[in-house]
Structure formats: C-alpha cells, structure tokens
Amino acid sequence: MSSSAATAKTKQTKKASFTTKSPSWWFPIAFFVLSLILYALQNLLYTLTLVIFFVSLSGIKIIYEYERGIRFRLGSFTGVLGPGLNYVIPVFEKLIKLDTRVITVDIPVQEVMTKDNVPVKIDAVVYFRVLNPERAILDIQDYHMATKNYAQTALRDVLGDSELDRVLVAREEIAKEIREIVDEQTDEWGIDVVAIKLQHIELPENMKRTMAKQAEAERERRAVIIKAQGEVTASKDLATAANTLHGSPGALHLRTLNSLNDLSSDQSNTVVFAIPLEVLRAFESVSQFLGNTSKPAKPKKR
Image (cartoon, rainbow, N blue to C red; front, side, top):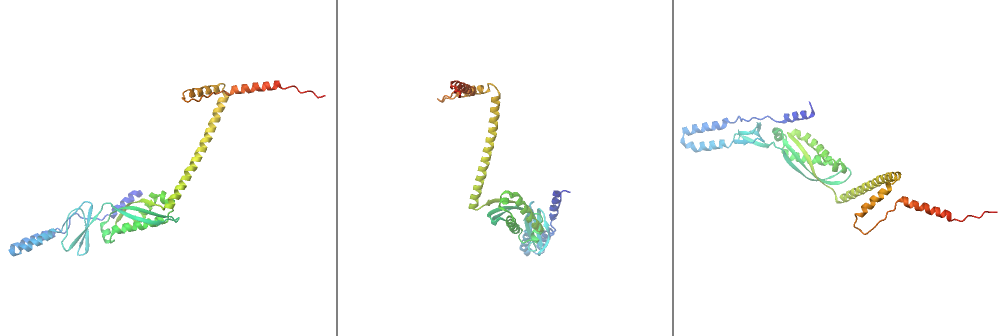
C-alpha cells in the first residue's frame, strides 16, 4: 500500500460515526399524547397543554450537510448527530454544532530572530478542518484558538532554526515543515491541518539596502564577464574572417566594393575612399626599389 493511500485511510478512521435519526423523537410524541389526555380530562388545563406542546417543539434542530452536532444529555455525551432534522429534549439535552468545512485562520505578524541573528517580520495563514467532532469538543476547550496558537509557536520555532537565505528561498519547504509539526499535535484533537502558507516577509531597512548593493554588484560582475566573453568570441571570429580573406585572392577587393555599396545608400556628406591593401603594398614596393637605386656606391678602401 502506498504512503498516500495509507494517509487517506488514517484520515478516514479519524471521522466519528453519527446517526441521522435521533432516539429522542419519542419525547414530542409523548408530549402530544399527554396534552391530548390533559385536554380530554379537564378543559382548564388547555393553556398548560399548549405551553408544554410548544416547548417540546423548541427541541427540533436542523443540521446542515457541512455540520455535525454533539449532543449532551444531563451533561453526558450521547453521540454525534448527522445532517438533517434532529430533536433534543429541552432543558435535559444540549446540542453543539461544529462546522466541518476548511477554516482559514490568519497568524498575526511575528518578529522572529533567524539563526544568523537577523530580525524578520513574517505572517502566515493556516487552513484546517474538523475530522472528529467528538474529540474536537471533548479533548480541547477551544480547538480554533488552540490550532492558531500552536501554529504560531511552530512558526517561530522553525524560523528561529533557519538562516535568512533559507527563509527567503525555501518558503514552501518551511511551510511544509511547520504544517507537519502542527498536524502531528492537532491529530489528538481531531483536527486536520490542510496547509500553511507564509505570506509576507519583511526585512529591516539596512538589510534591504545591503542586499540591494549585493545584487547590484552581482549584476555588474555578470555584465563584465558576459562582455569579456563576447569580445573573446568576436576576436576569434574576426581572426577567422581575416584568415579567410587573406587566403582568397580578390576577396578583400570584393569586400571593399561591398562596403562602398553600403556607403552609397547613406545620405551624409562624408565621402570615404577605401584603398585595397594590395595597392598600398605595391606603392611600398616601388618606393623601396627607388630608394635602393638612388643610393651612391660606396668607395672602395685601398
């Protein structure tokens, strides 16, 4: 059997059984029969008969589908009443209704000192429901307040054992840990904690400024690294392009003509004359040749 199936089976065993029919229905019937007998015996008891009859009708109770009723007779627990029409004996019996739907409770803002001595303010929301109405009434005085206070205490304990980085990053993990702690305790009260969500985490102003500077420095570091990597890649591409142009005769001239074509579409007044590198080298060779021929011959030593 998987863990989820075992958990579902455990939750189902927590639910208390209830009866849709109350065993106290004989009471209004007996009152009605008694009233008829009294009315038949003496007409002066007519008023008393009506009072008794209408008092008996006050014991009719309607329980909605999402509710369960805990009935006490002379202070003793007698059972759990299910949804529908039920009856409790006036004066002798008392009915307490419980809502079995999911209840939402806000945990007020808590100022907690983290493990690395950073004060933070945090609030949360607890979602829980009643699985066992009998235990929720008999085992705890106020299950609503008890669940809220226990969740508040668990929140402070878990955050006190966590560092600030974990509090800011692992919200879901911390909320799950808190829910497990609270659910383990509230199982004894017939309460099932559905979820706990951490809402707002507020940091001190000096910590916010420090974290902002750290984030800015980290972004600048990444920008410098990316720019340097881009320059390295561009230099490699330029070297590859230069080697390709140098190894192909006429490629540089075609590149020059392509650049002139791009410049011709520009509406500026700047005119650029591009001279191929081969022409410059030709002029350099001619100048070197003329320089060598114009030098006078050195006299020979005797």
